[in-house]
Image (cartoon, rainbow, N blue to C red):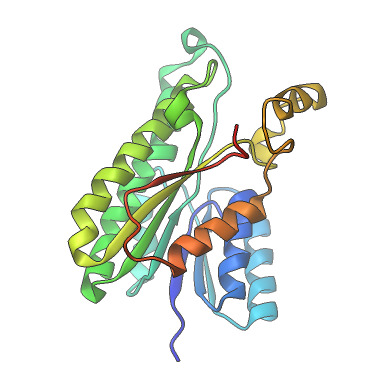
Length: 239
């Protein structure tokens, strides 16, 4: 039986790596990408192929660049699942942020989702089937001080998710987003132990989330209910 294929961006570490492992465990062939961490990405590819006997293609490049995304899809002729996970943050006052830094956050976190969906959707339309999951953040709904660009990019991603879901629903393609709370990843490594403890005090679940928990939810969204689409699903421990 032919395996389904999932494309996961930002897969060399953190949430993306956990998602890649979850899908590999469930028999998906993978296409995994990253911008800089070539060695980590190739090591992951080898481990997943050996452990789960699936096919893994790797791609290193900046998906904030539409020409790079076009190159990525040059060798993709079938796709069942797209996970837009790659993302960056910026911590600081808006007045201190340069134009280039703003453009980099918006391009990486939001525009890349457009570039990838533009290329992936025609492949899914051919099969009248597909799943698109965007990895978002609670700050896309609530906004975070000192993270204006990041909040704006994730808010845009949430609206993008809802609108595209309506556009693709008649074609049996579901589009959803997971709005993560504080997850134990490198992106949040800038917080001190004291700051983490302070945040945990505000989280009813009394802990931060694990990448594997995000991966589990993403897998459920891609293997379950076909009537569920256009949703921004919070995964934040009740924060």
